[in-house]
Length: 361
Image (cartoon, rainbow, N blue to C red; front, side, top):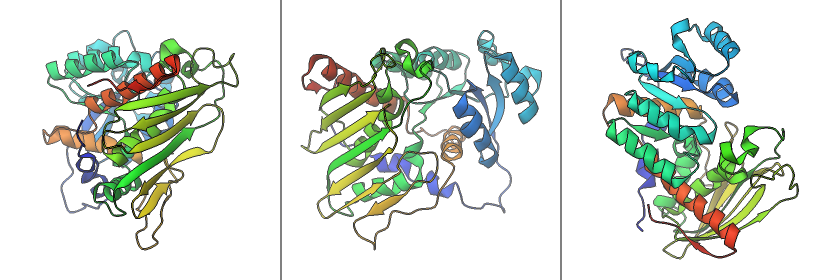
């Protein structure tokens, strides 16, 4: 396994997105269709379009007619711009839609990504990419066959604090990063929510928020983990009968460097990473929230305090700009596959109590 150039996939467009270009003509905006109108679409993604330079909301897809009416009124959409899951494939005939953004339960990602690609649309998919590595591969292949881009919603890879932390690691500002600790979790509420159903979510805290901690370790160390060891803890076996509640895992990398991670649905306040390098430390807390992120370093002369951005506006515009310029986008589907291969190794380790190798891509 080789080190990956994480820095160049995250830098560049991120900070530039906030610069004023008043003197330039208005750019073309790609039309986006949101598939799934839950909390994330309602409270974060849709409002972010107002801050976008290259992206606009052109359609929505929902299984709830009342939501369609509400979104039409709020965003000035016509009846033709509101689709349902049954007539979704007719977007093939809608030239106003350039990108389809999949914001559905994890188990539905694979099907709708493939359908969107077959309809000739570029696809942006929320994390986790899918419920299995096999589904990830099918999604990647479908988009390649259709000659359409597939982006994954790893917003932190373009968030300025994380971009700067990646720069610290890649440029060895504090020396080589030798170890990373990362955690993300919260106390889960409604016991009837889809995230607690394995058939829909594929897993619990690990699939939902643990992937952020996993991502941070991978892009700070800059290697793919070679093996993992994990344990699972449950304090409420009824509520979490189908999915994991709390998982602790250790990752070893080919270079011998290590990472300790935790994710949970049992308590609030776990939202950080700490990178320990040869000549200092740096980190973030909170690290993965939609706003209010704070960075720190062991050297006051090298702060980790860049300006804040709207995470969703930045990543959507980056995807649109890549399409407009006919350039590859990162993080792409292969990045989602890499995470899923590690996640599957974590679940295998929990099941058999042994150290598990991470399967090859």
